[in-house]
Image (cartoon, rainbow, N blue to C red; front, side, top):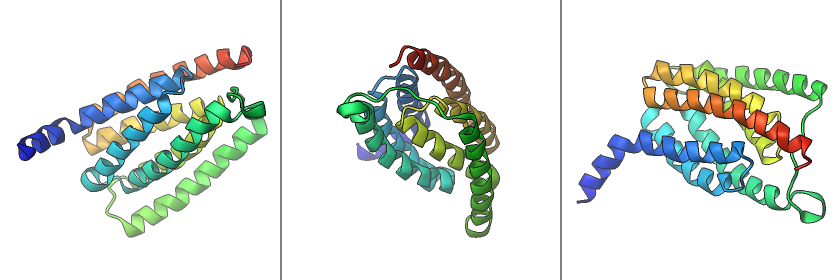
Length: 197
């Protein structure tokens, strides 16, 4: 019986992970706090598969970061505002945006070198760039910063290509949808920011 359940799960794991993560990012785009607990479940599932099955090591380690920041983000959205109220949507200044892009590129180059030397990754530069970009996007998401969605759009586009190269076509389609969701999130959070929410 256990073997049958295990076989079923392994056959449909990619689909199940996709559904859980899709629910998480859609809730985030809407500005709903439920994205955090759903995301915590999704990152555990995704991280295990990325490391043990797909060989996306940096991406797998990123899930540990997502888990920690997911817990903090959950708290921040509820109590991160003035007088422990709900945090409001904010944005980076232009100079901060450019500085962040420079930091992402430098960090991704360094991580690419590590992945080339220490792992058997077949896509070290793509894995490094998406990992670094997503780390910063997650920090901004945690702080309800609107620029998070620009980073997610860029990362998701690169993810589509990376998953296509790895033969993970279902995930490639998922990340194409995530790109559209990130664009929706940017639009939605622009409205929330203008409304002072």
